[in-house]
Image (cartoon, rainbow, N blue to C red; front, side, top):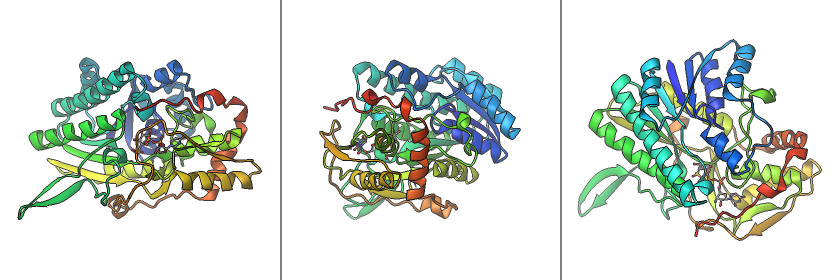
Length: 382
Ligand code: USQ
């Protein structure tokens, strides 16, 4: 397939580009360095330096023999989006081109506006561009499990059959997010669903939980091909943060009671899920939704695992409950269905002690670069 990856420089975009090109697809990546620029502005630099996208593409080609085409620009700008879609006419589009941080979206009015404008305008432009230049293309959109929030009933895979006064109807599963970022993802889903119904688009929306790790089949041990590894409060996800904190001797920052439960997945499984979604496209006029997670943990369980593995590596790991800067339930029911991707053939890479130890050993090599000041800044929701 001829595949366009939007946000191809990101934590997930770049590993996806390598994975899909290694799987035999013709890959084009698009990025405007939004994440790199925000990270620089906010002093949220990754643990190790990451080559720019042109250099990454060259390094990957030298290693694998596969060429990846690049476009640089802002997909929220229609003229640029139209040029990219017109020149590539893709069979499928993987849409990661969004501001991905919940804490950043809650930082200031400016950060909130950037998140809203970027995420919604980019999604709208993707929809308009697909209709104009490649109406049969399959859009694979990265959504988030955070769209559902933490309801006191089982979370279904995208849809809910509702019975009301003797009649029934299937609706999108109710959505109730706990950050502005997550709310933009709900709005994206609504936009996509509207245009699926109206213009017969083909869309798969992947409701993904927090991702951890950096190693993939394509990176091997080659650090020049690794994705960004953020451990700061804004752009680091919790498992990656805890692994760095353990190495740095920084008490693990469990927010509040630590009973917050989410569905996690190894970065290797993100790549496999996206590939499986591409290989099993939605029909015309269909919105397929999969819950993209492999196992659930509370924050306390994660902290205990990281502490145990850290100790086995000779690290002195302590756990600290800090006042929760976020507004979220700290104890709640959580039971999300996630059989769709397994049915398509996903073979999960679980969070074993070996997986965490490998990650911490990588961090140990870079421990001198860890900046304690960015680990916790306490961006408050309220
Ligand atoms: N948490 C802590 N301590 C920390 C950091 C986080 O207790 O130092 C807690 C948070 O309060 C939250 C949970 O860990 O309850 C997960 O937080 P996170 O920062 O790993 O994940 P989140 O902000 O929800 O966002 C991340 C990605 C986002 C993706 C989302 C999937 O940044 O792009 O959409 O995970 S999900 O969480 O399922 O919505």
